[in-house]
Image 1 (cartoon, protein in one colour):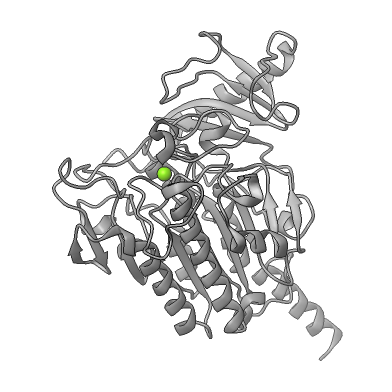
Image 2 (tube, rainbow, N blue to C red):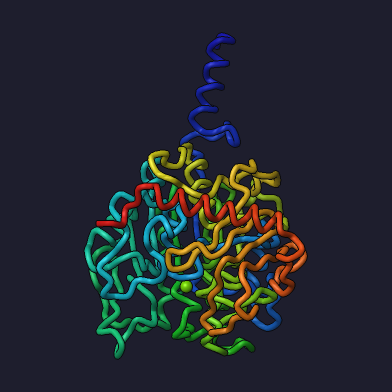
Length: 444
Ligand code: MG
């Protein structure tokens, strides 16, 4: 090959597959697995400090991979957080502020480009086994119409059951295969389908999304999981841990672990108003439904043997929004440019470096309102809410915290830092203006 041709080949490979992994060929496109818990808190795993819940497989995932200490879900609520993960966009861009109920007329807008659709464009096989919660009243809202080749799961939360709601269906593809299924069988069923999918697709690139229904109430552990010192909550988390172990074991046994990124996280913080039935946000304040840290900062564990250095603790901020960009880049694509996609590619973080500081802030939203922003260690709340009804600072607003020094948001420091307050207020108002001026897909 002439020097000219060699240079051209190198250039083409850079342009096609991105600069971070120029050695990738289409056959080596990595598989991507996202395991997404429902209402698992920051403090609910052994590796995040829980004293009695046993999670040996997730411990191994941490020891062989990377544990994030500043990882966020895109929302403190179920539907909105799933929207954020699957579109890479803040929920405020969709109008999905909170949760859909079975009769909600809205669903995932056809113009959204889901992560699954993006992976399909790159030639991936795609599957989802678990909870959807992005619209059910029209077939076009369902997973198979949004990029997934295969789906087994519930269309909404596992507590939307009789007598309050008429029925919860277990759906395979587009077909209801059971009404009001025995939920103690779900974690096992989703895991078995995930394992089967991996075995069937081991020779082609695949995207696998496993959004477990647990540990959302009602807590329904399988028969083999009844021994946790933490009671039923511990039982369902320990069963999820078993499921993660099965998925990792299968990837290793099929010889594809070194070509697979697995990311484990949660849709939002623990549902603390459920008392013993709800989880723990550890040292963080509050839980699900709030934009205090406990509502949105969640466990985040990345595993990719040979690519992610074993036993790394990652303290840089990252979020589920970033997984969208990262997946696009890993499959030789760019995230869509005809709309705002939030987040950024975190492969540099996963490979032990830093990300480009293009978006050095993170917005916390609730009910289609911006509530807070974080930049570096600083977090400014312009409004707060808690399902507990507590107003922790007696109505004072705005509230400023240094999350590096004070992750528990106990020591309010706005009076001492007026310049930082002004800078963060400016960030919020410019974001609000931008969101208001951009086209969205929900006014149908
Ligand atoms: Mg949830």
